[in-house]
Length: 92
Image 1 (cartoon, rainbow, N blue to C red):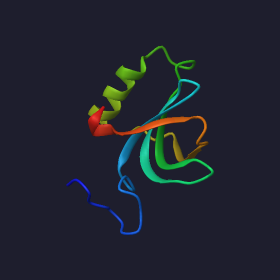
Image 2 (cartoon, rainbow, N blue to C red):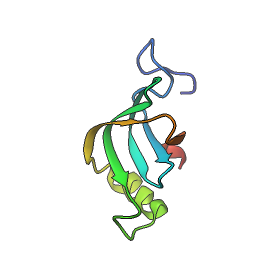
Image 3 (tube, rainbow, N blue to C red):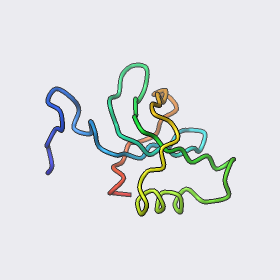
Image 4 (cartoon, rainbow, N blue to C red):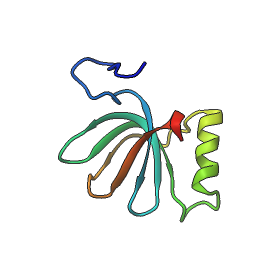
């Protein structure tokens, strides 16, 4: 439902599973919590680091969508200057 806020008083994406890529090429999938001056806070996050795996980010994202998010970190704070755009996982 467009415009629906999961928790009143929060941003529209609060609680939604999103994809964020950082300036260093890593891709993060997790539940969006908020964006503050410190950066983007996400919960229950899976991380794709191209330096650590031969799997492409596109293939990795397809696996996250098909089998569910393989959580590797409970909380991640991405500094705002490193984070790229935020997309819903279902839109990727």
